Structure formats: C-alpha cells, structure tokens
Length: 271
Image 1 (cartoon, helix red, strand yellow):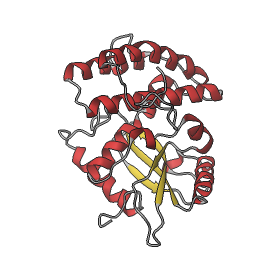
Image 2: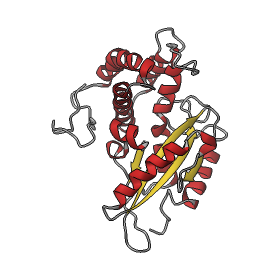
Image 3: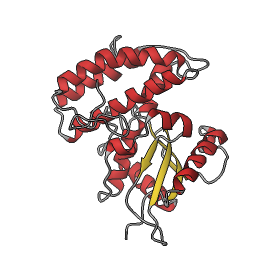
C-alpha cells in the first residue's frame, strides 16, 4: 500500500487519507494478506527493534484510517463481518488467533492489535461527547517516529483558545483496558499515570515534546487516557464504536465527557 494523499502526493504524516480506486474488497484482501504478514513479522521484536516499532505504527495507522474511511462512507453488514472475521474471528487463520509470546506477554498479537486500535474508540467518545468537534483522522494520528520518541499517540487540535487567546493543542498517551473502564488524567509531572501503565519515563518524554511545541506559541496540554478495549462488551465491533444498545454504553460516554471536560481535554461548551 502506497502512502499518498487523495491527489497522489505525499502526506506530512506519511498516511493515506483516502483509498482511491481501492474497493472494500481490495482493502480486505490487503488486510488478510500483506497487512497480516507484515504485522506478524514485526511483533516478535517490537520491544527491542525500532524498525519493528515503526512498521507496527505504520500498519496500525493504515488500519485505523481504512476502518474510519469505510465506516464513514457506510459499510454493509456483510463487509463488516468479513473484516471482523479476518482480524478477530474464532477461525484459526484470524489474526487475533496467532499466538506470539514476547517476554512475559503471552499473547502479544492480541495485545498489540487491541491496543493499536484504541484510537478508534477515543475518536468515537470525542464525537459522542461533542458533535461540534471536528478532526481529520490522519491529522491526529502520530507518525511512528513521534510515537516512539515522544510517547505521543495522538494530537488533537480542536481550534479552541485559552483565556489569553492562545490556541490549545492536546497530546495524548492512549491505553486500552480489557475492563470496560474509561479514565482521563492530565499529565503535569514526571510520574506514573493510570496505575503505572504509563511510566514516569513516558510522562517525561511527552512533557518534553510539549515543551518543544509550546515554542510555536501554543498552549500544549498532555493527557493519559484509558478507553475500553475494542473486544470488550460496550464496544465489540471492528470500528471501535461504543454500542448504544449496551447497558453501559451511554454511561461510559457520559463519564468520559465529564472527566474530559473536568481536566480540559474537551473544550468548554461555550467556546
């Protein structure tokens, strides 16, 4: 898959924002072929080799942009079932069924796939909390190098300003939990967050990145966010959408909005 924008040129983030000329069937074939092969190849050395980390980041960004593209354009149920079978099916060939142990992590394929798809659920939570907030998927996803070096998974530019009229930028270190839980914490010091899932070293890296960006004349805020994993009951769909028909779905959205506004991740409503 080539990294091109809709006009055929290179994008700043190295991401393909539209799948021109590529049908959903063709994209499914790519997922079940080249994507799967490259994903499994990089997982064994993902914790030790920068090239594997960059490959993983690139593949997950492509997966997220593709899923969002087809979801926003209305994917029929039969196609959703097809991509779900490729990624999360119970069949032996499904990606999530491939077992690779890395260190003390017994199922690195599952954890890497589920964790890498967490941005889909965060995007849905943001949109459900405030329908006026708009963002380009390819613009908020960090390129793999930024993710590795600065621990910045996502960057949100909602266009709001602080009381001094300075534009606010939000950097996110994102995690997915196998319990249907959601948490939003502002990173303000070099200490662990989310129960230690985000280490003091991670906090140090993202705060250093924020300091560099603040020199561009913007207020930069950093956040540690936990969302329900894509395999949990309130989500349980390949597009990462919080399900309206789940008993806890609305509660999760409401709690996220409350916490996110409290710490300034979501702008005040009167802006």
